[in-house]
Image (cartoon, rainbow, N blue to C red; front, top):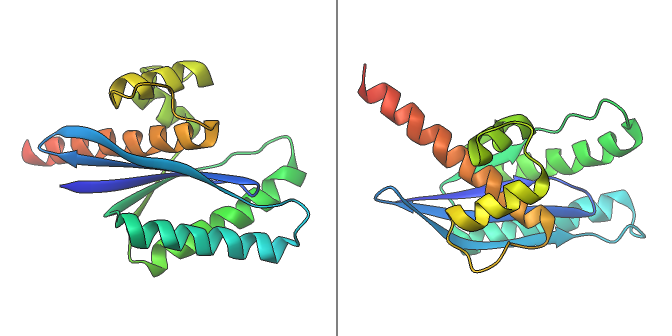
Length: 166
């Protein structure tokens, strides 16, 4: 059995989604969002992300983590706070001893929908189908986090398959 947490980093909303793989069957465990108030100072928001993520890690006990790589070519004002949140997330995972894998948005889309140009709605619908959920997971950041976890599960299965063939 493997338990994977996927994380969609953000300062205002960090999505997380946890899946479990048991005998090649993927199951949804939980998903949610860690929210911070834009009125709070930056350092307090980062502490909230750290503390709430640590609670999730202690309660859900994931074995592996997958975090989305963020590329901001246009808006540096947004990129820096998200990068700071991402740094706190990576630190929290490292302190918990959880191995981290990182995937680009393109890799996540290709893994979930089979094409890199899939839109958010397509990804959300595919995650609903793949995890056999009654409805699309919400909010969006949590659905994205589940997609990131699924991306890691499919990549790691392929890696294991490739190693067996050698």
